[in-house]
Length: 536
Image (tube, rainbow, N blue to C red; front, side, top):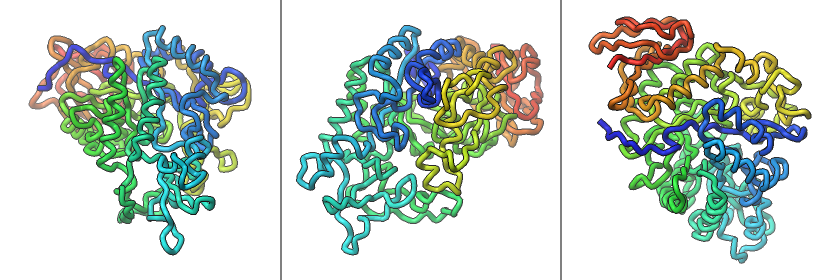
């Protein structure tokens, strides 16, 4: 059995909540969420039981990728407010005994950043090597076959200096060269700037992209590609991402973080479970929370999820800590992926696993993807291939606060349309309904944080079939819990055979089940789930 520690840190015990700032709450009527808007809703997040807020980028930016194209890492974009607003928000977060995590975007800058302006001015500029430049092939084509995540070649020709530069995303987002120690030091100074202000850590964007193959070798063709997939997936990104040398850079970033007390680094990763594990780093000095998105990308059935959970438990190092998410700003909302009937059981799964759960704004009230007509589409990824429905706009629509005009998000016209169901699906209505998804989230979070077995206890799988998934969470000397979930739309059964567990339902997707004593046969309708406090 894994050794139990009494010294769990805030990022292990608490729940992280992603605030997509642009869509959370608008305070000034311009239709764009801002820092004062976030400040105005802190009491809601505190009421819900959230312990840490992750803010998407608020830096000055041309907004070609809505803040993930930065031209000043040490400022605040005027659309979002001022540095004074940020300082006020940070102080208010800490006053509520909550934490604030910022989005760090180190892989690339905006092409309007002063660093790139200098780098692109001439081949002799001291910052030329801060980005990845290379000559064309003899026939004038790009240096290799690498593709941008957003489609097309990852190389852009610069007529002034007669070389190509690399961009893993938009051509307006040139990649920094992390093989250059000056670049590393510049990003370390950015980290120190915000850590000195008192933030509690970083979510690091596109962390696997930071180092590229030194020889710029071609990526191999993807034998599993089909036309319904993004064009970028025609190739397997063996040489353009997830290079072994990236871990040296991450280790150095972690060293900066460790100069401060009790800070966290979360890494964005779209890798297999085994791929994620390497980002904990040697001596566990890499990313404390390598993001695990398997609950987003895997098929939603009990047997598949049971294997995913088992892999994570088997591979996460003993001294490390898992991470889980069921939604984020780049993926279709959970309720749109799995259906309304499984929304509550999805909440139970996320909040009863061992590891740190990350919630995405609006998922707690059942917001779903909103259809955005092509003519109103904002997302650059979606605009690259509009016929394939890859836009991220549908999951980024304004938070639905009330049944007031524009869902209480703004007094002006929102930057994206509000979901058409906002009159029924909103925070204010859900807070008045004891049976709502929001109230279930609140009760789940409260139970998780009051019971050590659910927040930091061990995970033991006990049963899985085509419908049902069951596991135990336990910590020595305190209450143990059995979680049974029907991750299907049909009735399922868990017949306790070799192991007989008895106890009382402490929390369930349906209040009518709470307080019942479980027997040998546990029967659940599709989308139902229970948390059983076991008799010790």
